[in-house]
Image (cartoon, rainbow, N blue to C red; front, side, top):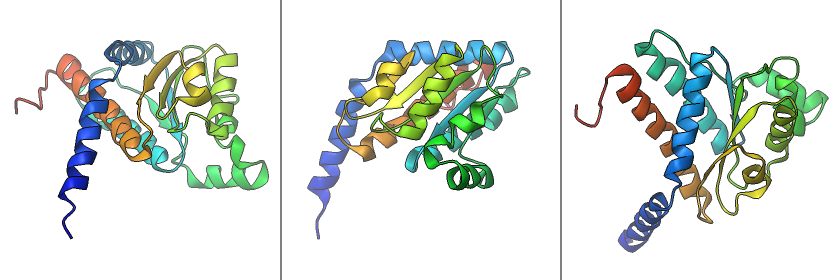
Length: 195
């Protein structure tokens, strides 16, 4: 089988979508994350399915990747990563509460949420976002498709304007690595593009 046309189509769609990203919103997200780090606050990050892996990857890239080279550390907490807690809340209370439950009594003024949902309509993500907003916390929302309710609720919307979950999830990882790369260069003096 020759899949070259399908491969080229996928790559072309990815490139065209990347060109449509809101650079100002990405800049705003970088500034909010930097302010959160400088203030010693926590960034809670969470999502379902492939987005849960992206959330975990964000935590790794900021807590180890960038923070390895900075005196002041980022403090990201991925709400997906404690399987025992997630499963206990899902079993005893309900899957729609797995993220909100972990924020209750823990989220503090100045903390930020990075909420990831391709559709923008994942109930457990929205429940956590609505709770955080009610406490006065800021939301960075990563979405695709039409953006759903998460796009509306987000203080900063990192939206991927395409009806493809695969490209949406690809570009959500681009947001992570792009921001990591900018902080490497500006906070750590490391330019991986030139190395």
